[in-house]
Length: 306
Image 1 (cartoon, helix red, strand yellow):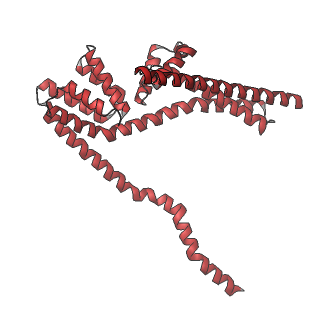
Image 2 (cartoon, rainbow, N blue to C red):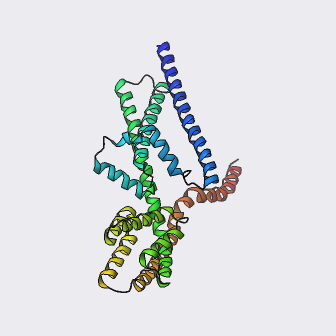
Image 3 (cartoon, helix red, strand yellow):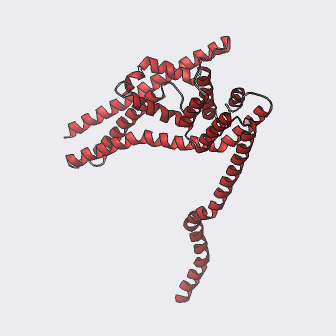
C-alpha cells in the first residue's frame, strides 16, 4: 500500500514537472520570437511582431486546426461568433478556446485526483469517480463561464462608448464626408479607446469593399456586437437610406437620444447605491457601532453586579 502511494506521488510530481517544463519552453520560444520580430520591426518597419502574428505562428507549429476537425461547420461558426462577441478576433481563437477547455478539464481532474490521494484516500470507488467527474465538469465549465463574463463586459463597454462614437460620426458627416468614409475615420479614431468596437466596424467596411451589400453588412455587424443600441442604429441607417431622408439629421437625433439614455442609466445606478449599501452597512458598520455603544454599558453592568 505504501509503495503504491509512493508510486502515485512520483507519477503526479513527474507529470507536474513535465507540464511546467513544457509551458516554460513554449514561453521561452514565444519570447525569443517576439524579440527577433521586434528587432526586425525596428529595422524594416514590419508589423509581424503583433500578438496576432505570434499566436498564428504558435498555432501553425502545434497544428491547432486539428482541435476543430471533429466539430461541424455550425459548431465552429458558433464558437467563432462567441469569441468575436467576447472581443477575440484572432484567426485561431476558436482553436485556442478548445485547447484551454481541454487543459482546464485535465488540470481540474488532476486537482481532484490530488484531493483524493491527499485528504480522502479511503473513500469508496464510486465516491472517488463521482469527485473526479465533478472536478472535470467544473473544468469544462470554467472557460465557458469566463467567456460569458468577458462577453458581458465587452457589451457593457459598447453601450458606454457608443454615444461618443455616434457624436464623432455626426461631426464627420456634417463635415461633408460620405457615410463609409465617416465610418472609416471614426473607426480609426476609436481604435485606441475601444479596440473591439473599432474592429467590428472595420470588418463591416471590408465586407462592403469586398462587394457585400450595405444592409447585409449591417446585419452581420449587429450579429457580432449583439447590442440593442447598435441594432437600432442599423435600422435607422437602413430606413434613412431607403426613404431618402437626410442621414445627418437622423444621426443627430439618435445621438442625442443615446446621450439621454446614458445619463438616465447613470442616474439609475446612482439611485441604486443606497439600496446596495444596506448589506455592507448591516454587516460591517452597524455591528461596530453597536459594540462601541454597548461595551461601556456592559462593563458598568458587570461592575455593579460585583
